[in-house]
Structures are given as C-alpha cells and as structure tokens.
Amino acid sequence: MPKITGYKTHDVRFPTSLSGDGTDAMNTECDYSSAYVTLLTDTDLVGHGMTFTIGRGNEIVCTTIESVAQRLVGKDTEELFSDMGKTWDFMMSDPQLRWIGPEKGVIHIASGAVNNAVWDMYAKSRKKPLWKLVVDFTPEELVRSAAFRYITDAITKEEALEMLKAKEATKKEREEKVRKLGYPAYVTSAGWLGYTDEKVARLTKEAVAAGFNHFKMKVGADQANDLRRGKIIRSIIDDPQYLPPGIAPRDPNGDDLKGKNAGPTGSVLMIDANQVWDVKQAIDYVKGLEEIKPWFIEEPTAPDDILGHAAIRKALKPHGIGVATGEHAHNRMVFKQLLQAEAIDVCQIDSCRLAGVSEVISVLLMAAKFGVTVCPHAGGVGLCEYVIHLSLIDYIAISGSMERNVLEFVDHLHEHFLNPCSINAQGRYNVPSNPEEGYSIEMYEKSIAEYEFPNGSYWVGARGGKKL
Ligand SMILES: [Mg+2]
Image (cartoon, rainbow, N blue to C red; front, side, top):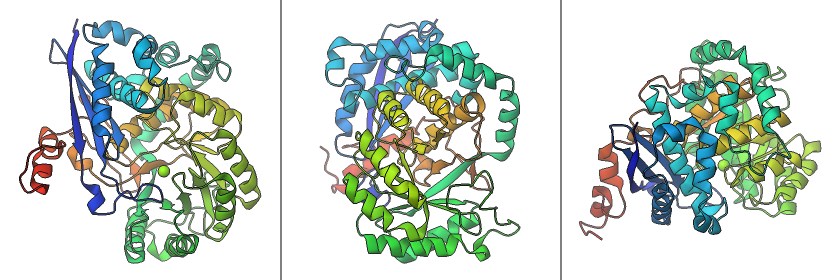
C-alpha cells in the first residue's frame, strides 16, 4: 500500500497583467498564479493540486501548503481514501495551524490545494477522472466524503443520503446525456474591464459564433461606461445575424431561460462587480443598469456580508435582477448562511477557495437542498480544469439538473495543463475522459520551469537575466 513520503511546491506566476486579461473593478493588475503542490508516495502514484492567486503573496500560500502537506507524510493512501470526510477533518484539525484560520484565508486555500491533491491521487489510483470516481460512489460513500461539521443545522447526513438515493437510479442516464451534449458554459473573457469597446465587440461576436449564449461583463468602475459596454454586448447577442449558421434562436421564455432576462435570441447577460460597492451603493448602481437586463449581479459587495447580499437581493427583485456570489466565500458556513438568509439566486462555488473537493461536496448538497442553482467560478489559471469535474458531480449525482446551470469559461492559460478543459461547437464543456487525468490539474514541467517565480526562465528574462 503506497504511503505518502513527501511533497513539492511551486510558485508559478503568469504575467497576465501585461495584457489586461482578468481585469475588473477590484483587481486591476492580475498576474494569474498557481500555488502548486505534488504529493509524493513510495510508488509511482502522485497527486497534483493547486490553489489560485493573482500574484504577490503566492509564495505565502506555497509555504502554508508545506505546513498542511507535512501532516500527511507517512500516511497510508488507502487509509486516507477509505474515508475522505475523515481525511478532510484530520487535515483541518491541526491545533496550531487552525489558529491562523480557522477555515479562512491563506490556511484554508492552502488546505484546498492539498485536499485536491489527495483527491487527484485517489482518482488516479482508480484510473478514473475525478468526477467519475465520485459519481460512481454509493450515496453512503459520497456522504462520507463530505465535510459536515458546522452545517448540520442546514443539512444532516441522513437528509443528504435521502437526497442522493432519490437521484441514484437515474445517474446513468444523466451521465450518458452530458457525455453526448457537454455541460453548459458561459463566457467571461469578452467583458474584462481593461478591454476597449472594439475588443469587447469583437470578442463578443467570436463568443456568439463559438456557440455561447450566456455572457458576463465586468462592471463597477463607471456606470455610464458600463451601460455603454453593456449595450454593445446586448446589441450583438440579441441580434440573430451573429448566431452560428444553422443555430436557431432559443425561446427566451422556455423553462431553461425563465427569469434570466434573456433577449430575443435567448441570450443572457450577467454582470460582475467583484465586491466594489457598499450595500446601498450596489442597489443604486445596479438599478441604473436595468436597461441592459442582466440576469444577476455577481459579488455586489463584501463576500462576508451575508445580510448585505440579502438586502441587495430583496431590493433588486422588483427590477428582475438576481444576486450571485461565492468565489470569495471562504467556507461552507458562509454558503450555509447565504442560503439560509435567501441572499443568493446563484451559488458560485470556487474549487480551491473552499478547502478542496470534500468541502465543495457539502456546499453542492446544501445548494441542492435549498434549490439554488450552482454555477461555479472559474477562469484564472487551472480553475476551468477543476470545475468541470465539480459541475459533473453536481449534475449526475447531486442536483440532477444542468438545464439552468452555466459553468464559467475563460479561454486563458489552458495550454499549460496536460489535460486541458475543452469546449465543443455548441459552447459547452466536454466531459474529461482520460482515465489517467485525475482532477486534470497536472501542469507541464516546462511551463513550471518557465514561469516559476522568481527564477523561472521567463521571470529571469524579464529582469534582463538577473536571478533573485
Ligand atoms: Mg467573479
């Protein structure tokens, strides 16, 4: 039985700030970065994991990953895999490390990287992509894999088991369907704040031609600007002439689009403020964007402000605009309260801000119980590779529905991964199917050698050859 013998971390940073990719009202100079970890065993079996940051501070996460991973050294892998919920509890319960959280901030995202690496190793050991490993679990195994501490007032293990059993008989049908159709996606990369109007228009046309019908635009720096850019996007996505050949407009009043403010071609616009406003400001600003008919405003205010989100949702409801959040919700308790306070229309889990697959499963279970659609956060680097697995788990084994869901897609940096995500001609994610790919997060060694900070070849070159 393989034992964990050690770990390696890499601080990998891509100079995306040079192109304006990833810019929004809050994050104006992002160097998309990966705090990357490989767990090693005394056999060939390894596990890869990472968490995402936007540059400076990535080294702090790498150091913290080492503290978390150290706890697993010497552990028998089969023992870890046999009860992933217990493994998660063990990882989170170091009494000294817990003090620098608990379950939030650097320690939590570092724990996410390591927990994801354990899941990756588990999937690889069974020769299945991660999503397939998890959907093949019995309901009992799936419940055992989740993190239930502190959320049993919202969902008990018994309730979760009952929900999963009700979906069990039809899992196979859903798996076949999604393998054939792909998983619905939306595109964010047309509407970064740092792009010119011309670039936004061009990228929007390209996205429509690529089959997408949900689009997201960044807002929050200047209302008049946002309205102008929003009208440019709407004028393209609502115009049937830009649809790909042979694609008919979707019915904007169909069950899958109801309540999403879809235009005449069945296209949907979402807006994202990345936390820039106070509560009252958010309400006033978004009311002023009613004309461009967004489905929801994402991250209107501070990610910890549960009651603030609830107030914004209540105030925007008469205007037909919903609220989405979650990419900075730092643990399952924040999601629990967002759901309990009826603060969100859409639940945006993040694959590595939550502490790995085990905590994500808990949130998927709660969202399904509360009937809230899950549309995971992605983009950055590696996040799209991760989240397709999570949406497949949600659809096949947990919520049983993908018709109203859309999974974020951003077309940056996929070339650095051995098993990059991909999109089909209908603008949907393909289902990862390589039995060796685990959680699809392994990066090419040459990418690490080039972009490792501060002494990878790219960064040394950028400093005119000077090593640090
Ligand atoms: Mg966002």
